[in-house]
Amino acid sequence: MNKPELLAPAGSMAALHAAIRYGADAVYVGGTMLQLRAKSAGFSLEEITEASEKLHACGKRLYVTVNALAKNEELDALKTYACELYARGVDAAIVSDLGVLVTMHRACPKLELHVSTQASCQNYACAQTYYELGAKRIVLAREMTVQDIAAMRKHIPDDLELEAFVHGAMCMAVSGRCIISSALVGRSGNRGDCAQPCRWNYHLVEETRPNQFFPIEEEAGTTAILSSRDLNAIELLDELYDAGVCSFKIEGRMKTEYYVSVVTNAYRHAIDRDVPLSLLQHELNTISHRPYTTGFYHGELPFDHANRGTYVQDYSFCGTVLSVDNGIATVEQRNRFARNDRLELVSPTSIGESFPVSEIYDESGNPVELANRVRQILKIPVPASVRAGDMLRKKNG
Image (cartoon, rainbow, N blue to C red):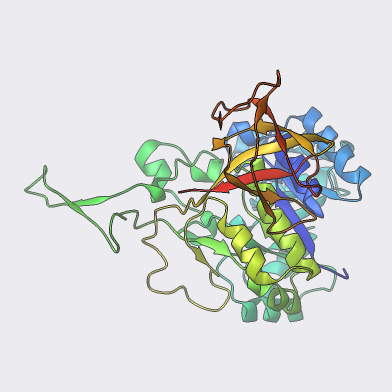
């Protein structure tokens, strides 16, 4: 590859369209089996066909996650599923279970297989073994350093690709293999049903004083001691590419199309080197996120890596531009904004642009002072740079 692949998530068709528009080279989605996210984020077989056609029409690729741990009774169905995915144009399946990898490869050798980060592959002997079993790509364990990745690259076949996460939520468990949710509420994170108890607030209780709760805090108001910071490696892309990573992956199949748009856009410009990193870091700060970290890429995590359960939410997604006619945009509203507010533009061709809202009209042409009805269709004057598909946001406070 002349440039690394930018791989974006999609948990809906709207998010897939956003990934395409904002510069992803490939998109990964869940399907109907073992997709390791809530059922609402899974694509039907018909939607997978539609996604494949849309992506291939613009020279992009589609990957489908089959990365939950399989049960005995699911293995036979996986044989049919592998062939079905290939027939519908899927470019690769992402798997973590060793039995799933072998079963799918034997059933459909032409379907490319990528080994999920859930498999915790972090040494070249492990990577070589997966390669010999039919894997085309390794999605690296989250715990690897840049030096670890470079060492692996030197010892594996040239045609075995390496993919690494560069942005998004991280789990405090090793490569996301956690059983806290199963233990507390009977919902298995390893089967795609995590309740995210690591992000709950906890207190200490002394055995003989059951009604006295002592908060566990490292900073004021924060007791989510098991909650990791979010990954942000936008400043490390050159290091990762030089170490042998050919695909940069964004986490977030449960995220909105706004999240997918902003993050994909920022990393697209970072790879293309056409926007200063300082501006791109600002873009990444406009999405809801836990405080950022570069993960393990430069070694062990800092002592205070955890204990950051609160989210940073400095901006609101205000709406999507449906069309523009003679300087007037038709907007589908998402969060409230008012006349005289200043909105920022999220666009593949413009970074950091903003404009004041001079007027707001409803669909009947009546003037409106405040846009506060979700998905209401409104019209506002916009600069000439605004295009259909762009998004609008506002700084909170």
